[in-house]
Length: 200
Image (cartoon, rainbow, N blue to C red; front, side, top):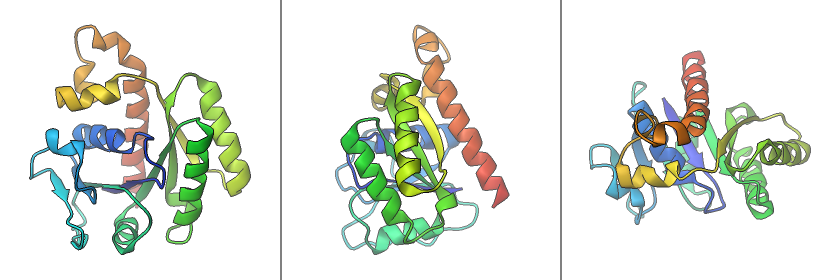
Protein backbone atom coordinates (compact mmCIF):
# COMPACT_ATOMS: atom_id res chain seq x y z
CA UNK A 1 0.00 0.00 0.00
CA UNK A 2 1.38 3.36 -1.05
CA UNK A 3 -0.55 6.58 -0.70
CA UNK A 4 0.37 10.19 -1.43
CA UNK A 5 -1.29 12.93 0.61
CA UNK A 6 -0.63 16.21 -1.13
CA UNK A 7 -2.02 19.69 -1.59
CA UNK A 8 -0.72 22.94 -3.01
CA UNK A 9 -2.57 24.67 -0.15
CA UNK A 10 -1.26 24.46 3.40
CA UNK A 11 -3.29 24.33 6.59
CA UNK A 12 -5.85 21.76 5.41
CA UNK A 13 -4.84 18.91 7.73
CA UNK A 14 -2.52 16.99 5.42
CA UNK A 15 0.01 15.91 8.04
CA UNK A 16 -2.61 15.12 10.73
CA UNK A 17 -4.48 12.88 8.30
CA UNK A 18 -1.23 11.22 7.20
CA UNK A 19 -0.24 10.55 10.81
CA UNK A 20 -3.57 9.03 11.82
CA UNK A 21 -3.55 6.78 8.76
CA UNK A 22 0.03 5.73 9.48
CA UNK A 23 -0.72 4.89 13.11
CA UNK A 24 -3.98 3.13 12.20
CA UNK A 25 -2.60 1.08 9.30
CA UNK A 26 0.94 0.48 10.58
CA UNK A 27 2.52 2.45 7.72
CA UNK A 28 5.74 4.41 7.48
CA UNK A 29 5.74 8.05 6.39
CA UNK A 30 8.10 9.67 3.91
CA UNK A 31 8.07 13.47 3.89
CA UNK A 32 9.95 16.24 2.12
CA UNK A 33 9.32 18.65 4.99
CA UNK A 34 12.47 19.17 7.03
CA UNK A 35 10.71 20.72 10.02
CA UNK A 36 7.78 18.45 10.73
CA UNK A 37 5.71 17.73 13.83
CA UNK A 38 5.92 14.09 12.80
CA UNK A 39 9.36 13.87 14.46
CA UNK A 40 7.63 14.28 17.84
CA UNK A 41 5.53 11.16 17.26
CA UNK A 42 7.37 8.78 14.94
CA UNK A 43 10.82 7.28 15.36
CA UNK A 44 13.41 6.93 12.59
CA UNK A 45 12.13 3.46 11.70
CA UNK A 46 8.70 4.87 10.82
CA UNK A 47 9.64 8.28 9.41
CA UNK A 48 11.98 9.19 6.57
CA UNK A 49 12.63 12.92 6.23
CA UNK A 50 14.18 13.60 2.86
CA UNK A 51 17.01 16.06 2.50
CA UNK A 52 16.72 18.84 -0.07
CA UNK A 53 18.41 16.82 -2.82
CA UNK A 54 17.56 13.34 -1.53
CA UNK A 55 15.61 11.17 -3.96
CA UNK A 56 12.49 9.14 -3.24
CA UNK A 57 13.61 5.56 -2.60
CA UNK A 58 12.35 2.79 -4.86
CA UNK A 59 9.96 0.75 -2.75
CA UNK A 60 8.98 -2.89 -2.74
CA UNK A 61 5.50 -4.10 -3.57
CA UNK A 62 4.80 -5.03 0.04
CA UNK A 63 5.98 -1.73 1.55
CA UNK A 64 3.27 0.24 3.37
CA UNK A 65 4.11 3.89 2.83
CA UNK A 66 2.35 7.23 3.13
CA UNK A 67 4.01 10.10 1.28
CA UNK A 68 3.27 13.33 3.18
CA UNK A 69 4.49 15.85 0.65
CA UNK A 70 4.42 19.63 0.72
CA UNK A 71 5.12 22.26 -1.90
CA UNK A 72 4.77 22.54 -5.65
CA UNK A 73 5.23 19.69 -8.09
CA UNK A 74 8.83 18.64 -8.51
CA UNK A 75 10.52 15.42 -9.63
CA UNK A 76 10.25 13.87 -6.16
CA UNK A 77 6.52 14.46 -5.92
CA UNK A 78 6.07 12.99 -9.41
CA UNK A 79 8.02 9.91 -8.22
CA UNK A 80 5.67 9.59 -5.24
CA UNK A 81 2.62 9.88 -7.47
CA UNK A 82 3.91 7.19 -9.82
CA UNK A 83 4.52 4.77 -6.94
CA UNK A 84 1.14 5.43 -5.27
CA UNK A 85 -2.06 3.48 -5.72
CA UNK A 86 -4.08 6.40 -4.37
CA UNK A 87 -3.66 10.17 -3.94
CA UNK A 88 -5.58 11.93 -1.19
CA UNK A 89 -6.16 15.67 -1.57
CA UNK A 90 -7.33 17.34 1.65
CA UNK A 91 -9.35 20.55 1.76
CA UNK A 92 -11.82 22.35 3.98
CA UNK A 93 -15.06 24.07 2.99
CA UNK A 94 -13.30 27.44 3.10
CA UNK A 95 -13.41 29.09 -0.34
CA UNK A 96 -9.63 29.66 -0.48
CA UNK A 97 -8.98 26.04 0.48
CA UNK A 98 -11.43 24.81 -2.17
CA UNK A 99 -9.58 26.87 -4.78
CA UNK A 100 -6.31 25.30 -3.58
CA UNK A 101 -7.88 21.85 -3.87
CA UNK A 102 -9.05 22.55 -7.44
CA UNK A 103 -5.55 23.76 -8.40
CA UNK A 104 -4.07 20.62 -6.85
CA UNK A 105 -6.49 18.30 -8.67
CA UNK A 106 -5.83 20.05 -11.99
CA UNK A 107 -2.09 19.70 -11.45
CA UNK A 108 -2.41 16.03 -10.55
CA UNK A 109 -4.30 15.25 -13.75
CA UNK A 110 -1.11 15.93 -15.71
CA UNK A 111 0.62 13.01 -13.95
CA UNK A 112 -1.92 10.39 -12.84
CA UNK A 113 -5.31 8.98 -13.78
CA UNK A 114 -8.29 10.85 -12.35
CA UNK A 115 -9.52 7.60 -10.77
CA UNK A 116 -6.54 7.63 -8.39
CA UNK A 117 -7.59 10.96 -6.86
CA UNK A 118 -9.76 11.06 -3.74
CA UNK A 119 -10.73 14.25 -1.94
CA UNK A 120 -10.89 14.56 1.84
CA UNK A 121 -13.16 17.33 3.13
CA UNK A 122 -11.65 18.06 6.52
CA UNK A 123 -12.86 20.10 9.50
CA UNK A 124 -16.55 20.01 8.52
CA UNK A 125 -19.32 21.32 10.75
CA UNK A 126 -22.12 19.54 8.91
CA UNK A 127 -23.08 17.76 5.68
CA UNK A 128 -23.54 21.14 3.98
CA UNK A 129 -19.75 21.58 4.00
CA UNK A 130 -19.21 18.26 2.23
CA UNK A 131 -21.94 19.00 -0.32
CA UNK A 132 -20.56 22.50 -1.00
CA UNK A 133 -17.09 21.17 -1.78
CA UNK A 134 -18.41 18.23 -3.82
CA UNK A 135 -20.68 20.46 -5.90
CA UNK A 136 -17.99 23.05 -6.72
CA UNK A 137 -15.22 20.58 -7.50
CA UNK A 138 -17.35 18.22 -9.59
CA UNK A 139 -18.68 21.16 -11.60
CA UNK A 140 -15.29 22.76 -12.29
CA UNK A 141 -13.22 19.60 -12.71
CA UNK A 142 -15.86 17.75 -14.75
CA UNK A 143 -15.18 14.42 -13.05
CA UNK A 144 -17.05 12.61 -10.29
CA UNK A 145 -14.35 12.19 -7.67
CA UNK A 146 -14.67 10.10 -4.54
CA UNK A 147 -15.14 12.26 -1.41
CA UNK A 148 -14.69 11.52 2.28
CA UNK A 149 -15.69 13.75 5.17
CA UNK A 150 -13.80 14.34 8.43
CA UNK A 151 -15.71 16.40 10.98
CA UNK A 152 -14.17 19.17 13.06
CA UNK A 153 -12.59 17.51 16.08
CA UNK A 154 -9.80 17.98 18.59
CA UNK A 155 -8.89 14.38 17.84
CA UNK A 156 -6.60 15.29 14.93
CA UNK A 157 -4.65 17.67 17.16
CA UNK A 158 -4.52 15.27 20.09
CA UNK A 159 -2.83 12.57 17.98
CA UNK A 160 0.41 14.54 18.32
CA UNK A 161 0.14 14.79 22.12
CA UNK A 162 -1.03 11.24 22.79
CA UNK A 163 1.07 9.60 20.05
CA UNK A 164 -1.94 7.34 19.44
CA UNK A 165 -4.36 6.92 16.55
CA UNK A 166 -7.91 8.21 16.90
CA UNK A 167 -9.04 4.59 17.08
CA UNK A 168 -6.75 3.96 20.07
CA UNK A 169 -7.76 7.20 21.80
CA UNK A 170 -11.46 6.45 21.40
CA UNK A 171 -11.35 3.04 23.06
CA UNK A 172 -12.03 4.31 26.58
CA UNK A 173 -12.74 7.30 28.77
CA UNK A 174 -14.44 10.54 27.77
CA UNK A 175 -12.96 10.41 24.28
CA UNK A 176 -14.82 7.20 23.46
CA UNK A 177 -18.01 9.15 22.85
CA UNK A 178 -16.62 12.48 21.64
CA UNK A 179 -14.37 10.82 19.03
CA UNK A 180 -16.96 8.29 17.89
CA UNK A 181 -18.03 10.11 14.71
CA UNK A 182 -14.55 11.01 13.42
CA UNK A 183 -13.34 7.51 14.24
CA UNK A 184 -16.19 6.09 12.10
CA UNK A 185 -15.28 8.49 9.28
CA UNK A 186 -11.63 7.44 9.37
CA UNK A 187 -12.67 3.78 9.43
CA UNK A 188 -14.71 4.39 6.25
CA UNK A 189 -11.66 5.98 4.62
CA UNK A 190 -9.38 3.14 5.73
CA UNK A 191 -11.81 0.50 4.45
CA UNK A 192 -11.87 2.30 1.09
CA UNK A 193 -8.05 2.48 0.98
CA UNK A 194 -7.66 -1.21 1.83
CA UNK A 195 -10.32 -2.19 -0.70
CA UNK A 196 -8.69 -0.04 -3.37
CA UNK A 197 -5.35 -1.63 -2.61
CA UNK A 198 -6.78 -5.15 -3.04
CA UNK A 199 -8.08 -4.29 -6.52
CA UNK A 200 -4.69 -3.18 -7.81
